[in-house]
Amino acid sequence: MKTATLASAFFAAMLFLFLPSGASAKGMSGKALFQKNCSDCHVNGGNIINPAYTLHKKDRQKHGVKTVNDIVHIMRHPGPGMHVFTKQMVPDKDAKKIARYILKTFK
Image (tube, rainbow, N blue to C red; front, side, top):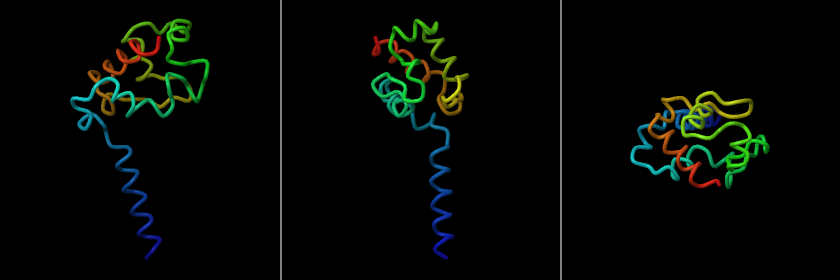
């Protein structure tokens, strides 16, 4: 009985974590969307997985990431170690808000 309860709680938590976030993100700022989707790995614009690929301007430019569209493309088609953010998870409008926030914030 106890095992069944734990399994149910685990699957409920997994379902919650992997539901598309688009509907709940409606009206959020770029900063709030960044904190919700990106800040776990990109603390203060850094990169805990691959420190050579921070969000700071010097690293972005070194890797050819200069525009909102460049950032959105990486969100949709990331390199090794980064989670894919599909349009269902982060709609284009929200992805662009995140990208504008990154460009404005991490100079």
